Image (cartoon, rainbow, N blue to C red):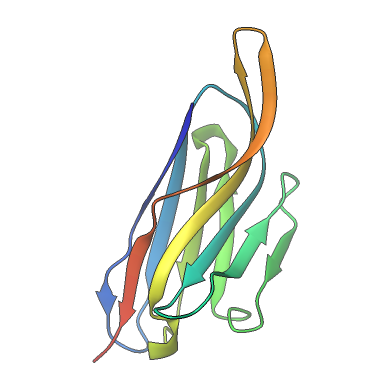
Length: 123
């Protein structure tokens, strides 16, 4: 079983910064892609940024130039550094990871989601 736990969400003023973290734990053999998504009230969940196992990154247009995704494989952790935050960045932010697990002789690769962390940008 795998758990993803996000942290770092907060209330911040426009122009401020936050760093989100997401740590995976469990019977992990390997973590492939990692990503951050966000969902504002009444809207669908959208990709913010993703990073492959080789650290290739991809960003939504709204995140380019302001957000940076990174990963620390030894800690099974993905980060999202968010700068120059705007009110429209307000949302619940979720991490997602593609993880290979092994329990006894069963090896499987699945996608896992965290529980979400609230980011509110307001003066």
